[in-house]
Length: 197
Image (cartoon, rainbow, N blue to C red):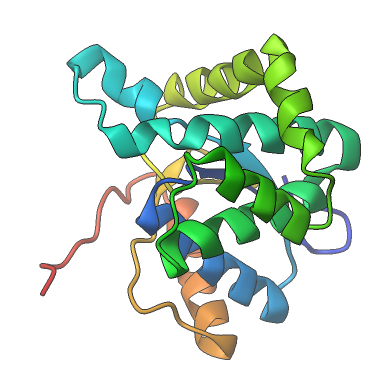
């Protein structure tokens, strides 16, 4: 849905374990600097999507604590809290190579984001934090999402990606956003892909 001031609202589905989700999130933050974009952070679990095929990897399990922490933070402090936490989790996992399945790493990220490390304990003590991210995952999966990052632009159908490396910055990030936004409105558009080098 478009916001009244011309800002475009998107639901950004993430998994903290996924490097592609991370790069897409860095890009959308760059695009937000040069385009009016309102990001709503949502959760898509690579663990859950791989369970039926018995293809869950150990790395997929590392997102559990981060998901539950972000769910509780979002309830209490809104989207900005998830934005801050995902940034710290992503920096730890994908920039520094730390294990976000490790409680000490999660606590350190929570503190770096400006919250009490006890947020993790509170999130894990509340079973509804797990159910909430799983419900969110299931709801978008039923609409056709199959991986991360998935974007829902202005309430449309979920689109996967973009898969990008390196991450464009400044106006180039905005131009990529313009193209993704346009393509997402075309019902006949299905896929555009090139070979990875």
